[in-house]
Image 1 (cartoon, one colour):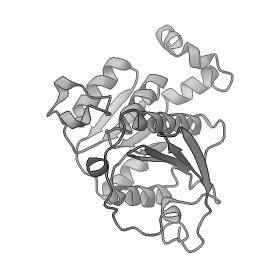
Image 2 (cartoon, helix red, strand yellow; image 1 turned 45 degrees about the horizontal axis):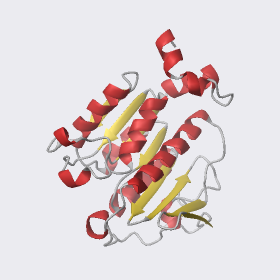
Image 3 (tube, helix red, strand yellow; image 1 turned 90 degrees about the vertical axis):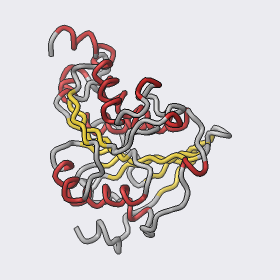
Image 4 (cartoon, rainbow, N blue to C red; image 1 turned 135 degrees about the horizontal axis):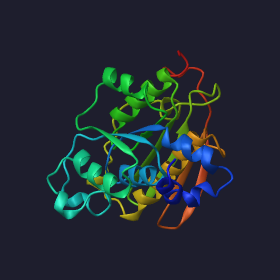
Length: 248
């Protein structure tokens, strides 16, 4: 690390759980962020700010005026730009230490398998079940930790799947039915700060995984009711008959 980096990350380096060795570990780390919307925006910004050395960002959409209420990585002048281009500009302005690779198209499972094999952690910031189940299958096969969150209306949820642990359930254990749900933010709405809260927590869990510190909510689904400011926790186990992780 150079003097500029020591100053930039000084507040993290002061933490005994991080120190210079941990900060260097972050600088050497690689993360994949799938989705650059309400969740992916704070995830990408905080991972870059914390000094994660390489971010691969994936989204096949363009910035729309209706996005700006919650997708804070994009701004009004970015309307009609590809989200990957808009996000790259914001991330580079925030921290040029973080290299960014853009994937401005919808990934198929073969391509995703190759990409996941080259990163240390995957963050599911997508907005559809097809992508979530595909990410889960690939992360299970590649034994890579997956930090998952979802938001709608005033409700959010967060969990971590870590197939490196033999006791870790996967997304398919939590949701046995792989059919697409009809609910979406476009149809049902979402309060602006909610994805910021859950996305920030995703970034926190990813950083903990990269540093190997703390306790991850593996086998625990954290549910947030923003309207009443209440948290609940549901515990779930690995399904021995799961068609995704039981056959690996």
